[in-house]
Amino acid sequence: MNRTTIGLLWKGEHVLSINDFVSRADLTDFQIESFNWLIKSGLQEVINEKGPIEIDIPDYNLEMGKIKIETPCVNESGQGPEPRMPAECRIRNLTYSAPIILEFIENGKPVPVEIGHLPVMLKSSACLLAEKSDEELIHVFEDIEDRGGYFIINGTERSLIIVEDLAPNRIVTSQETIAGKDVVIAKVFSVRQGFRSRVTVEKRETAGGGTLFVTFPGIPNRISLPILMKALGLSDNEILDMFDDEMKLEVSLNIELKKLSGEEAFDYLGKRAGAGHAKQYQATRANQVVNNFLLPHIGNSEKERRNKARYLGIMAKKVLELDFGRREEDDKDHYSNKRLRLAGDLMQELFRVSFNKIARDIKYQLEKQNARHRTVNIRTAVRSNNLTESICYALATGNWTGGRSGVSQVLDRTNYLSAIAHRRRVSSLLSRSHPHFEARDLHATQWGRLCPNETPEGQNCGLVKNLSIGALVTTEGDEGGVEKQLVNFGVK
Image 1 (tube, rainbow, N blue to C red):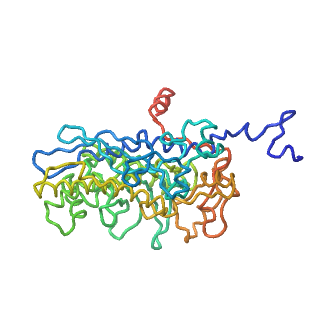
Image 2: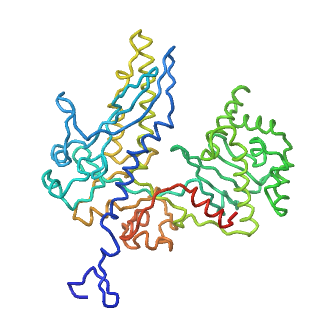
Image 3: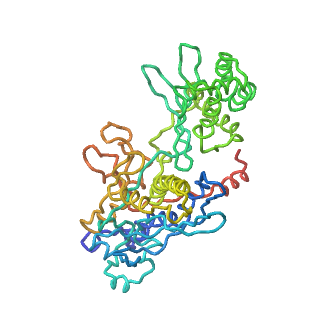
């Protein structure tokens, strides 16, 4: 190729440029679309999850309604909020953010209150630069080639790194060696409203004779699978009917080991969950653990308990199939078992944690007003600085919820391509100091999705990656239409 055809591909008599494969809008717009989802429905989801705030004041009721983001502005020298363009925020070390207005319903009357400021992603629907022409962008001192997709925090441009995570609510089976013993395990990371619960079903030989066990948060050590399934409402026959003839022997041996009724099994669960506490508390604790910590993605009420038991049965079936050699281990490094968390998802997680903190503070402030015989007023009870500081601190330092670091980074402005590449960077949650040889390896399913060459040397090798130039990031959608078509095709 001569100099005039660099970046071009020959196909017969036609010359194909990179632009024939990649639209510039695809390079960073997936981050902008994710942030637009956060503004449109992601923040409202968090408010709807929270529900009414329970205030210990007679004849006082407080609920939450609609949430909205206003025009980006800065409140300086007590003159009220004034719009500020991104260029001015860069020069004057300001944060480019917009007020969050939440409608509180106080005793049936709507009261809009500013609960804080949300940093705004450039070129998103909430940004002042959205829909501006090239001439208008030049007039406000912006580069017309800048794709946006980053934040301005205290005058510094910061980008949110895409986080690679295991697919939630998906069963993954494997064979492991724990304390010198071979163990067959089925794991699922059950996720609901930001809460992540790791549930495992395992088959291992023990001195007590049992072989099938479950571990999940809230219960110390492992618990026998049949006991838990009976505590969830299934009978012995219903449990056995979930397995074929070869597996029934293994399951029946575990059932015979401890012949308990459903009520006795639930009492046993309460003793394990509330060990050392009064019997009345043990039952309450057992209900709390089963509803909130065991497979929360299925539901968190009593009517979903039988479905949770059936789901555990499916996990146990996969464990036994792997143990009998009827299936192979699942490859957790296969990219169908991975998901990418974009800016909107990460910001929603941060907002959820920050909002829960100020919701507790609102409850405290209202009850303090009442205790001091003052007029209870939601406007004075909301301290908006708390939410703003919590969100801006995470974006300014990169220290995210869950003890993660490096989620937010200073945008690399070495040149135009490095700035684009930085917004397409993918980081794994795995520890940098651990070998993780398989996770660092190039997997065949990354072809066309991740660049095989662009990764740092040293301890981050293979854990920090970049999206391929033609990679597109799709978003989660409603599966109802797909399931309906599969049923029409005769899939069971």
